[in-house]
Amino acid sequence: MKEIYHNILYSIFEGKKMLAILIDPDKMALQQLSAFIQKVNLSMATHIFVGGSTVEDHLTEALVFELQKHTKLPIVLFPGDITQISEHADALLFLSLISGDNPDYLIKKHISAVAQLRHSNLEVIPTGYVLIENGKETSVEKVTQTKPIPRQNIQQIIDTAKAGELLGMKLIYLESGSGALQPIPAEIICAVKNELNIPLIVGGGIRTAQELEIAYQSGADLVVIGTAFEDDDTFFEELKLVL
Image 1: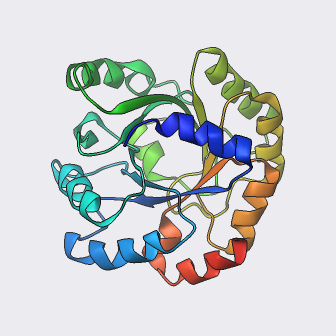
Image 2: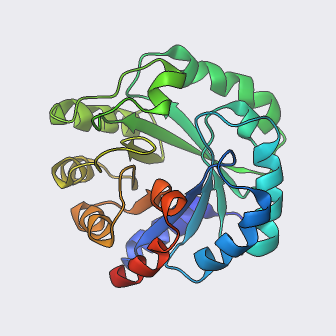
């Protein structure tokens, strides 16, 4: 399965809501995967994202390989490091942490990944990753040694996202971090969306159907949810309210 980016654009054109379920290989045991994915397949989910800030070597490969047995949804890598690249996935978000100033996560790790990607069949999608403060330190901050943009600095968030687009990114990903205390405010999503001509992904801190709907109404083209399902997979039932 390829043409993931094209299908995202088409879904936006058709006015369809997109939802990615984020699975962290460090937090999902393979023996639990089949039952979990059955619920994903019956939900409104349109994509499966796989990745985490810190993941043991080979866990991503094993998880993605197993996922392919249980779902026809596109599997998109959301890697925290080059060790999380798997040829069994359909696409890779080639993330550049444009909200931070650590050159490793702006370009250096990407250079290291080229040897793996040069002859890869993965669809590589350049993605500007913008981390926004949510009230607590996240694992992304710890791993990348960068600070998120304060949520009150809305113009800086807008300009950072727009700079990503002007640099040639195909997606902008607004993220408040795994386990965020609060989702990204509607005001920020709306302000960023109004500046962009490329798809907007929003993730972090969304734990209710109402918060999900607010993200869509504010301009998110694709919403990513992970922690809510890790804490309580009955959240799938609540999502039916958004349809």
